[in-house]
Image (cartoon, rainbow, N blue to C red; front, side, top):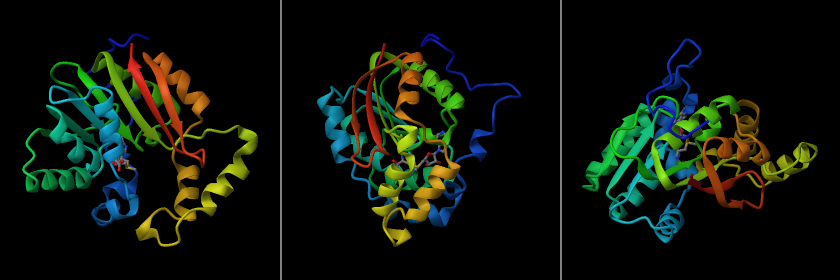
Length: 241
Ligand SMILES: C[S@@+](CC[C@H](N)C(=O)[O-])C[C@H]1O[C@@H](n2cnc3c(N)ncnc32)[C@H](O)[C@@H]1O
């Protein structure tokens, strides 16, 4: 499939209601209020990495599945245009409020998702997405990645973080036991073993060796990857061919 595939939302009776499938917790304002404390995400290394890969005041970037916008808010002062896309209204409301309070005026918040975001304007230079693609089953991940490629300029960079399984099926119990064993106990302060087990049971994280061909098929070349030592989080840098 080519990267010139339509930017318009997918249409047809086969398309799921994306806005209704954010993951129920992401639609819950009280969960969203505590989200940043639970996540403990520091965007500084990602901002520095993208600057190291050419991002500057002329650049445009989509943050797909932006959540409360911790990355969006951190990258905005360093680029021209940030499009923050998420299916969850409570997440976007929080980001809009923070952007107003910080007097940042180059962020556009869009309520949509991987399958429904309709890009307007020139193709973007960067797409960032952290811990959101696993919301979609693999068939839909492939469509999502192909849609993202269609919104990106040739040579643009996809910076993708997600919970992705970097192990063989036969290792599953050992690797997951190690991951759960390092989880926090207090759910307000991070992800508990129960949270992580729920993720594995109910969400759509996939194996690295399945995701990587999807990236290739969607029109990306994987430049480099970083696999977390627990082998359950991976960061991909991909160029749009
Ligand atoms: C675990 S949060 C990650 C948020 C943020 N990127 C971060 O790093 O903290 C997952 C986000 O993906 C959003 N999401 C769920 N399904 C989505 C979809 N189909 N398209 C785009 N975003 C989606 C959720 O609403 C939620 O804000």
